[in-house]
Length: 79
Image 1 (cartoon, helix red, strand yellow):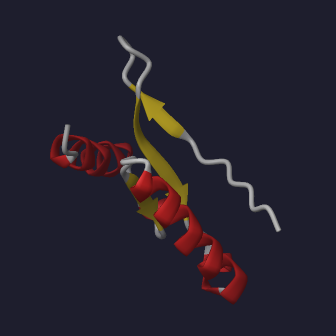
Image 2: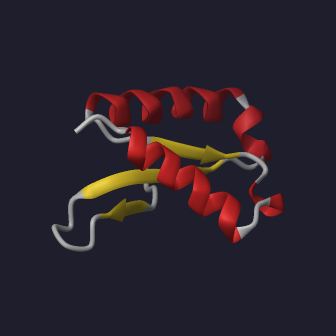
Image 3: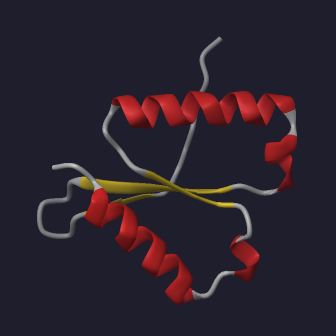
């Protein structure tokens, strides 16, 4: 069947180019169907050259933690 996926994607504000996708992994990601979906999402985004930042402990993160991780991924993204 067809799988759908909706992830927040952050874009460059000047060119509106996608920069990074964000996934919040709640406890349901331990289930088999969610792990299979995660593999699918990882592959699609990797094939598209889109970095993905996953957060499993997102309730414990500060704004600075989130910002730091996103900036790390953006800065190491091949252009």
